[in-house]
Image 1 (cartoon, rainbow, N blue to C red):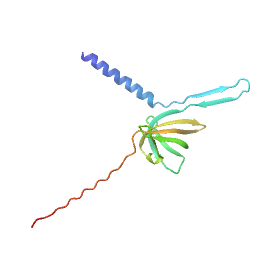
Image 2: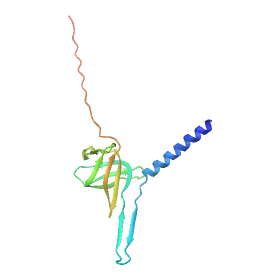
Image 3: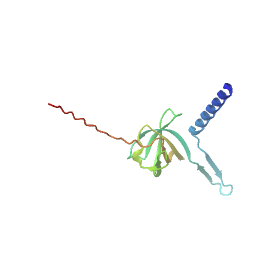
Image 4: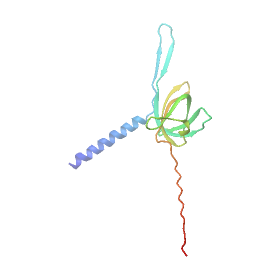
Length: 142
């Protein structure tokens, strides 16, 4: 009985670890076709995703630095006016929600030598800072 339970737990753990590895894998699919009549070569790249942390983001630039779990150094990811930023629930948020060290999933395509981001999914909602102030008044009786 205990061995069956242990085997089930180990099997679920192994399956979970494999799915996380696949989800974090960084792959790009490139399809190159050549027209036999004209000899024209067409290269098409599909959108790929990867998870990691936004390392640096400057609102005035056209890129941010992003580090995946498997990469030792951050990579420059370019964004355009068509790039959307969404929270974990899928609601579109502004670029002001993007902060350094924010975990995110980035959907991108490679255009030439640039990695162009199509969508950024933030892993945690933008922090709401509440400030509460407590006042204590002490009165003395004569």
